Amino acid sequence: MNLVIYNSLTRQKEEFVPIQIDPKDPKKVGVYTCGPTIYDYPTIGNWRTYTLADITSRILRFNGYKVFHVMNMTDVGHLTGDNLGDASTGEDRMLKAALRENKTAWDIAKFYGDDFIDSFKDLNIIKPDVIAKPTDHISEQIELIKQIEAKGFTYKTSDGIYFDVIAYEKTGNKYGELSTLDVRKEGARVEPNPEKKDPRDFALWKFSYPKEKRHMEWDSPWGRGFPGWHIECSAMSMKYLGDQFDIHLGGEDLRSTHHPNEIAQSEAATDHKPFVKYWIHGAFLLVDGGRMGKSLGNAYNLHDIKARGISPLALRYFYLSGHYRKQINFTWEALEGAATSLQRLADRVRPDVGSNPTSGRTLQKFLSAINDDINMPQALAVAWEVAESKALSTQEKSSLLIKFDEVLGLGLKDFSKASTKIEIPENVQILLNKRQDLRNQKKFDEADKVREEIEKLGYEINDTEGGVSVRFDPTSGRTLKLS
Image 1 (cartoon, rainbow, N blue to C red):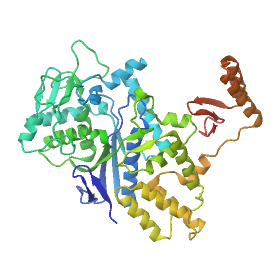
Image 2 (cartoon, one colour):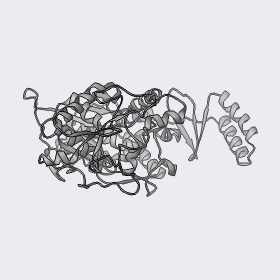
Image 3 (tube, rainbow, N blue to C red):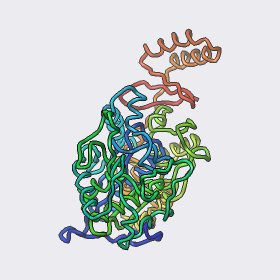
Image 4 (spheres, one colour):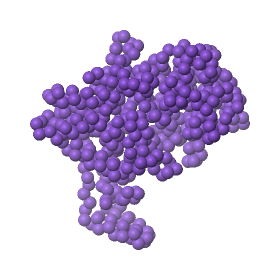
C-alpha cells in the first residue's frame, strides 16, 4: 500500500506524491514543523506534535524517501494576544518570561532552547536537519516582507507593517482555505485595532514602542522593531526548503490563523505559487478528560514525567496508542499503563538479533498500517500480534519488532537495559519509611535529618505529587517509584 495522508488543506486522504522539484533526486522530501516558542518548557501536549513530526519522518524513510526536516524555535515576535485570537496584540512572550525569571530574553531563549533540544533524546526523537531561530534569520524575514510590499499587499499603521488580506483576495486568491474560519472577526476578548483595514490583517513587522529599549529589536526599512510571529515560518521554511515543499506539520491550534497566514504571505511573495502540498495537523491532548493549562496546574512537561520515575518513552508509547487526528486523554494511570506495556513489549526483544525479518507478510501488514494516514494504533496492534505469536520463533519476533521500531521509535533494543529498576537495600527502606512517618506527623525538621542520612548513603529523594522517587546513581537516570 502506498503512503496515504489526510491533507488538512483538501480535507481528504491523498496518496503522497512528492513535488520533485529536484529531478535528480525524486525521493527527496521537504518537511517543516512548527516548533515551540521557547519561553518555557514545552508541555506534553506540545510534545505530542513534535513526536508526530518524528513519526511522520520515520514513516517517510521507511518508505524509501530521503527526508530533509526543518523545525523552528520561536524566540521573538510571538505575542500573548495569540491566545485571544490576534497574534499582533499583547505582550511579547519572551519578554514576559524574562520579567518572570529576572533574566534577559536572550537568556530565556538559550535556557529553554537548550532544554528543548536536549529533550529530543528522552523521547527518542530524531533531531531535525535544521532547527531555526527567528533571531538568526532577521535579514531573511525583512527581505520577504519587502517582496510582499513590492507586490502591493502591505500597509503601515502606527504600530507596524501589516499584511492586507483584502488586497490579497482582490487578486483572485482565497484567504483561510486551510482554516475552518474563512472570516475571522475581532471578538469581545480582542480589543479591535481601529487602524487595521480588516480584522484578518496581521503584522509582518512590529515597531518598538517610543522611548522603549527592547531586549530584542532590529533596524528595518520601516523602522526599528521586530518581526511578527507568522513571517518567521515562511522566511525560514522557504530558505531551507524552497518556495514550495512537500509537508508542513503542526498542532491543530495553528490551523485557524497561523498556517493560513503563512500560506497567504508566502504565496503573495511568489506570485501565488502553491506553498505547501500536504498539511498535517495533530489533535489536542486532554488531561483528566478536560483541557490542559498552566492556570489549571496540569500543563505537565517531560521533567514532571521523569520526576515520577517514569521513562519519557512511556509517554511516546502513550502517544502511539491514539490516532494523531483524534484527541487522547492523558492521566497518570494511563501513563503507568503505557510504561507497563512498553516494558512487556521490550522484554520480547533480544538485543543480539538484527532487523532483517523473513516474514514479509507481517512486515507488509505493518507497512499497510503506517501508510494508512499514520495509523499508529494499528501499527502497535501488529507489533503485539508479533510479540504474542505462537507461530514465530523468538528470533523472528525480535527481528520484526526491531524493524518496526524504526518507525515506533521506542528504543526496544536497549529499553530493558536502560530501564532496569534499582533495588532498595533494607536499611535504606527502613529510613525511607521512618522519614515518611515523620512527614505524616508533620515533624518536618526530623524528617529532613533522616533525609540527610539517606543521601549520605548515596540515594537522592524526589518528592512529587504522585509519591516519592529514589535515585541511586544520578548519571544513570534510573529511578524507582515507591508506592
